[in-house]
Length: 329
Ligand code: GYE
Image: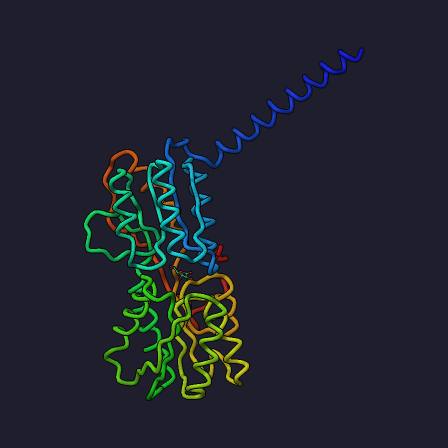
């Protein structure tokens, strides 16, 4: 009697296991492509912004979808941690390394080690600066210079529409020596260079962080007060940190000061719709699909495009945004 009920129990357990295996393989077949024999080491910068978290989520989602094995490491905003992670990927003999370099300089040694180990490297989101040839295979990320140009061109249109004679700008920049910081600054500066109304009062390093955006704005308000006509901030986080400071100082963001941001995460788009931001230049974090497809090509020995830039647009008070799709980050 005892034995009979024991064996019934085993049959039931086996049944449950079979059913759940069948269900999970059917779920996988719906979403997943063929399983790849590919291990990708990915070193992420950190979790400093909605953009970065959206980027991490997308990399994980697409790795799962493409059947790519992912070794993911978060460097918590430290270059040393990224270098250590890349060394671990090499020791582990991953097939491909992908990483988003926090700053442009300082990668020669570790990338030479990867090259000597025969592991191809994909740059994701940000670029490096090096005199050495062939350390990386390609770059998958936004055209930050173009983003800066779009911000500057918007400002010129806005100044025309408001009939402004002088336009005093403060710029809150991203992490010093990072590609988006350098290029968003350069594109913007070039776009406004020939317009004699435009004056950049100060550029200040906000490190892409909300808390730093608030601090920077406080010090800019103390220094320049109502001279400020425009705040150009290199990402949404810093913009969202700066806005409450502008309000606390008695100014109306979006009216007394023109506010220009970059990224286009949902929180900033909501604030744009409320009229407290005037323009957000889009920068999409959804780079995972291109990263997986490129990694698979590299594993198969195929050639890949040197640079892949996603299509991007601007969102502004010049447009009707009532039907805008949720941003997803
Ligand atoms: O704009 C910012 C972030 O490198 C494009 O990094 C990325 C930037 C993005 O944390 O929000």
